[in-house]
Length: 184
Image 1 (cartoon, rainbow, N blue to C red):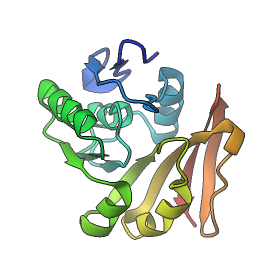
Image 2 (cartoon, rainbow, N blue to C red):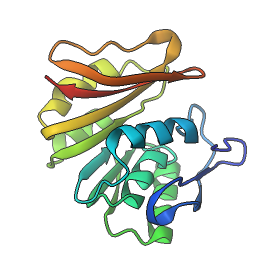
Image 3 (cartoon, rainbow, N blue to C red):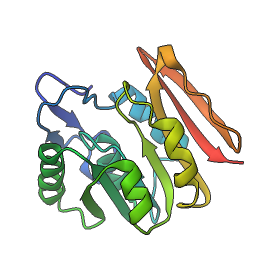
């Protein structure tokens, strides 16, 4: 499990399995726990070879690095905080992952200004934000056919997909509700 006190997270599968990555302290930064990542990557399939992935609120990078470790052809990690973005870039260099691209940007601004289409998108915004509902419309235009979108939200504020989207998988763990969405 990610150790938030020590600001580190362990890659749980793929070529970088068991590698420990460090990240700076930041209020609200909560890496997706190992148990949730295991379930998510069982849903997605263990091998993401050739897929383009977007980690729109990268934070610790747990989801994006996990996707790259499992063979994704391209993983874009977007993070607004400069110190966290710098740590992501340092970890990407440490791993030597050619598929990794780290971008410092606001999530909505990134969707409005950067080109690219994705097969898998990870949406794990700060729990206190209201961004999930505002992100799905601009994100839909960036998805390849058959794309899947992982959404993590507080269990107490279960996120219901808006019209045009459907949840294909869903589960809870502790205070987290997580689901896999697709465009209908």
